[in-house]
Length: 219
Image 1: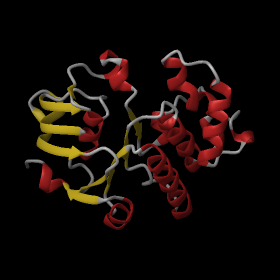
Image 2: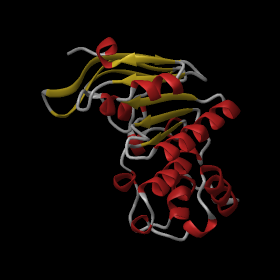
Image 3: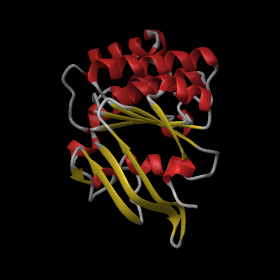
Image 4: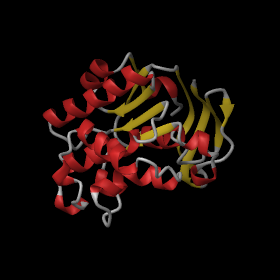
């Protein structure tokens, strides 16, 4: 399971944006986290993805309590979670071509065998034509770049996915396509999903259950 117990977190000492949050995801389950902008749900998502150390509280991942974060976390924990952010242009290195963005986690973990084939297969899966893979972020649309970011999140075959407002900047057709890719991946692997958003219709259609921010966190 992915368990968040009593999480309090922020970016300035003494000024938490998340207070005493509790949330549990079971393997294979899709949970939507619904809340208004600025409530702290993206910060909680970063904690769940091992990208932000909370001030208080506990994250338990697959039965093991997380004690180190970001690059200091054990590789087995870091690679268990794939994450897609709301703004692809802030989460992708503008100097890299799309094929290298997708392959970043493989290189970072030393998995170079079959790198080109894996990258090409994932690009095709998310709907990126081969001609786009040599382009850099400024040469493609937001939707095309987000497809590459989703492929990057899937490349290490994570057991958990955190999608933080993944579709907020996308049109309806791209939204449907990327949600379809996530659901296909989950059906094949049994991965759990935390989908953060502010659109109740999308989350209700996408997820097994949707929880409101006010139900899991203190004010």
